[in-house]
Length: 610
Image 1 (cartoon, rainbow, N blue to C red):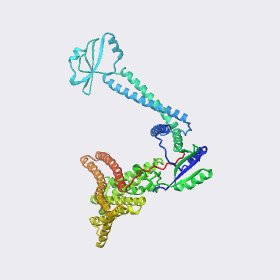
Image 2 (image 1 turned 90 degrees about the horizontal axis):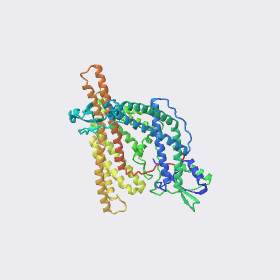
Image 3 (image 1 turned 60 degrees about the vertical axis):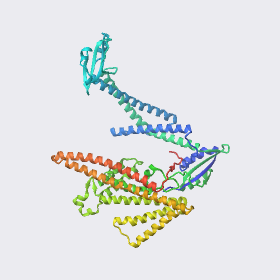
Image 4 (image 1 turned 180 degrees about the horizontal axis):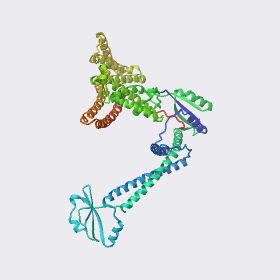
């Protein structure tokens, strides 16, 4: 759900304004209304750029520390030291230069490796001997050409000497009197300025320099990462303060400072007591319809895990419903159906449980989310009778309950039923939203369509599932559908004449019929993707058995194990991708579209010290 908000206006004498902002910052509950764009404020844009620079550096230092922990396991991070802005950016410059030096040395290393690799084809020769020959009046030239273009006449004409042959390329030199023209169809070789031995010495020295620099960077990372984190927080606080001043209006010859802000409703009384105590003037304002009110979501422990999925699409605006409580169960159900295998679901659950113990508190909700998703996939995979590609129906232990497993026909029917239910719930949300925003009479047609859809589904859909309703109930449903159609055709736009309503009703009928059909068919992917994962796992199981039939016991066990690990690894990876992408697609496209979700909400970010 979306927390209720209050809007306040504050009018403060200019000499007391800094102390007032300090009070607001200490309270940490007021989201300042942005009345001025900061796009053209160069001072604020510079602060944002500087923060991004520091954040990027912190991420790099964290990666260095993580790599050190994996290799050494005894990295001790120094406690944070307070840094003034001048000292902080001086430290940033120092670390950036050191990391840039590492990149520079790695670039030189790649060039040296390339030169060494090329010169190894020619061998380790002496440049001094070449200089001596040139002083004696001879010219040494280096060439390369494809085998097919090499002419043996060059051996006599230009004293050509074949040095090496590599990947169908001949490498050779010519020794001629100084000034002798050399006209051959070959490419002049561009050699490094020094010999192979010298290049290898340079490379060894460079390796030592890189190792020393790596150790230095590790020390910098361990010693300064916490200090930079605190420095980044101070920069964020400075930006928040500057932004608060930027959003302040100066009135009465700049003697009075005017500021607007938002606060969560249940925190309003506590804030008012503090401001009354300090004698600051404020006034609660009416929230006008359509205002861009900041959004703070309030959900229970289970539903809160799925908030990132809602936020990935968009936060709801203040004038509609939070869809997260409905996203949560359906996303978990869709994931379980798409993964389609109890073994894969069990892997997800076990992996999430293990990683949960090692994660920071900020990342643990994602591990818990995947525990739920893995659990759902395990249950639904077992119901569909698949465990790492094995068909549980064929296992003797499960013969007594084999009739309770879902067949492929059952799964396809179930997917369509779930799709219809999901769409009906979405349209119900849209109807209630219209009722809240415009009033009941404007939502009557929306509710009427829901009754029509439900009635027709019961009349024509239930018999397909071998569920037969009493005749009297069927007649009642026909009556409900008829009344619903009348309302949908004759009262879809209150205030307009009957003919306009009827025309609008015909158009709505066309959109409803075509839209429902296409949307419902989209849910067949739940069956198709789940079935594909189980079948693919079964294929690798069959390959492991049939390809090793002629082997003896020990080699067969090893080869079967390799086939199963590689095969199920590929199958599991593909299933995981599909099980995340397609449920998100069904939520974003089918649910949000049919629920008339508008979105566009801006997160509630109170003005406070980080």
